Length: 229
Ligand SMILES: Nc1ncnc2c1ncn2[C@@H]1O[C@H](COP(=O)(O)OP(=O)(O)O)[C@@H](O)[C@H]1O
Ligand SMILES: [Mg+2]
Image (cartoon, rainbow, N blue to C red):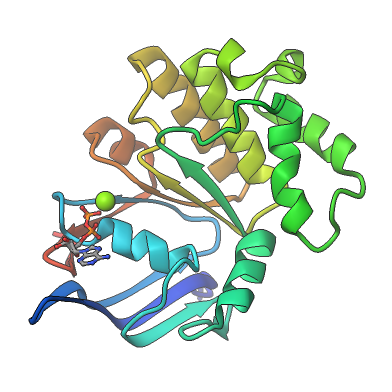
């Protein structure tokens, strides 16, 4: 007998409804899914299918209208905004399409930023920043400003920033959307390595090659998960 993998995330009949004028928009129309610790999941689906809404819920940026959201065995469906902020700082790392590095800070100082919101603050921060910079192969860029880096290097710096607090989950929204083919491959290789080391990753992508690199695809359509074929 194999024990079932421990879920990191469980959604049970999650709905998210936006009121637009006198019309309800069902951005999520009853989503039930489970993501195990250590999974690398690609969320795919047409524009408007609910991918960003799902990512906002997983990122504690928003709350479901109804249904349950469980993170690491804790019901986080209706956390207060301040509890959501604490969860984000301690448990999550974010990677964005447009990198979102602060232009006036060095790479190292960008990487240190999430620690200022986390429990242990910047204690041991310099050492930790050096570790994650080494992990993404950018030790030689520590003192550079973001605009002195190539697009691929910027995204690797952003991944280092996402890793600095040893997150339980990395959420990435179109992380390769602004990269050329060569840098897409380099960033995907890094995600694959992190996955092999046990990191849980959920990314949204329009790119079939990027989706194929994940260990599982979740396909969204009209606010629902399409059952796997
Ligand atoms: N803040 C909002 N207010 C009203 N409608 C929204 C809002 N956010 C998303 N929606 C609607 O919910 C649906 C799903 O959107 P979204 O999650 O952004 O889809 P995707 O990321 O797959 O393109 C769309 O019909 C969108 O217009
Ligand atoms: Mg979207």
